Length: 157
Image 1 (tube, helix red, strand yellow):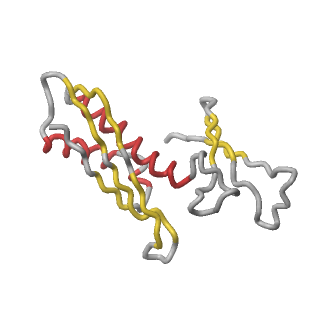
Image 2 (cartoon, helix red, strand yellow; image 1 turned 90 degrees about the vertical axis):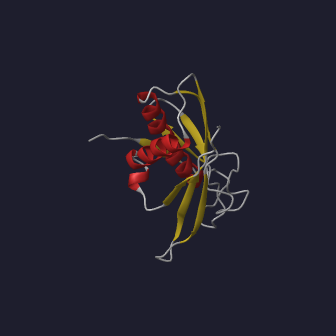
Image 3 (cartoon, rainbow, N blue to C red; image 1 turned 135 degrees about the vertical axis):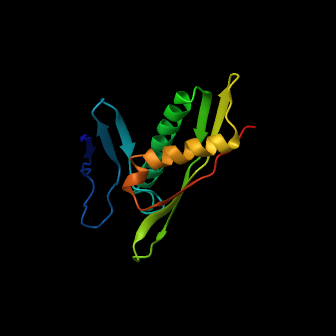
């Protein structure tokens, strides 16, 4: 078992009443390594100026978390197979909508990784698909959510 921590800090500004629901949703995520990430609600959920569009929102972080976990397993499994990867870029997307339980939820996430392999040993599309399958099967984050996760690799063959 492993334990992970994040500290979320928000502070009401002195000019904000709060009870009128007109307050900034800007806050920080602080992590054990010292990294501080400016966060906010999404402007698609809470309109500007109460959201900060430049900050990371929980929905984006959810998608990034899934994509990052999948990538880390993919890289590990590819290295084990002795493939060389020069780059991995995933333009992941998510759909938030009403789910079966009539609740707003991130119902679908699509990972669209483009991977550049180099060297003499390069995997076929079928081998890449198998690595993606294994990465998805082992991804801690994917195993933790109900969201449908689709993987649409962009092959560079």
